[in-house]
Length: 389
Image (tube, rainbow, N blue to C red; front, side):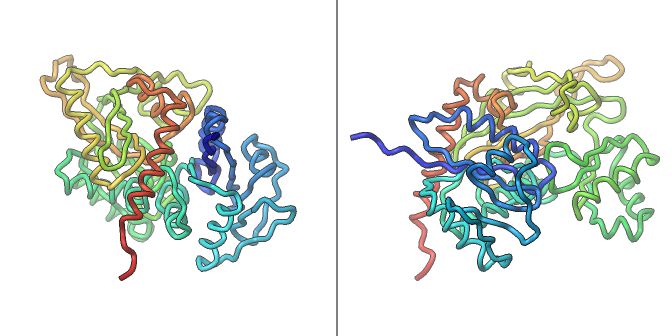
């Protein structure tokens, strides 16, 4: 008897500023999935929030402009000749999503949605309401992993080292910029990094060297989120800290990969460094570290994963002082701090997360298999929970 193929919905696109990154990740995953094991259903979400499958999803994936947009709200497209928009209200949305999954006979959804509305717990909440198995962290893990302020609170509660920071609301900045500036400068020393709290791929992030650069950076971050996180640079002025990354995989018993290092071609690993075709930034896998440093970082990565209640996958990023300071003096025990956790990292075959696992002994197709299996295991574990008396 032939074993039934798993029907996997690969969900991509979305309304965030990382829409294009999501398309790249999804295209890579779709290409790598074994057709002998899986029957894959591509599902796309346009920047306007319209849900597409079939030819529409493929057109979105390939960057074609033939996809029709609608201002009627979110649209769930079942495999039928005509498309009917779902109700705008949350009341109608979850049943519509469940109906779409049932219509496709999906066993699991692999959401490759980076950033807002895909990595922040919102789509995960929809999956939970619709009772659909899905890859990655749940609502809490996704939302805390997305919100840099909440994430840092979780890290601090676990006693994990982070760089000094200040969180500012957009309303506070717009109403009294001078007061906010004094508050930032009282607690932090330049250079600082100004970031939108809820975004990824380094979108909206600026490195600020002095007060003259602060206002523009704050305005940019505020255009992406109501909450702004300002972090003190590791090592102080003139220091370019090492940027280290660890891939974590698992549910209740997560494992950490070897450690990688990003050597950016500019002051820090910004959006252009990551995705511009002219970028000369280089990944170094494995990173050159002592056994003790590597052990500490991998343990911290797992602790961060658990602190945020993550599941499935996450990439944990660290900053480390260089071994030699700006005066040429060797630093005996370079400071290592947690930078952030990313619950849906870039997932092309050459992205850092899969490359780290490849270096650890898990190929890209094997990694996809494992993530799908973890999603199904998590769904089975959830069935042990009583949701009513």
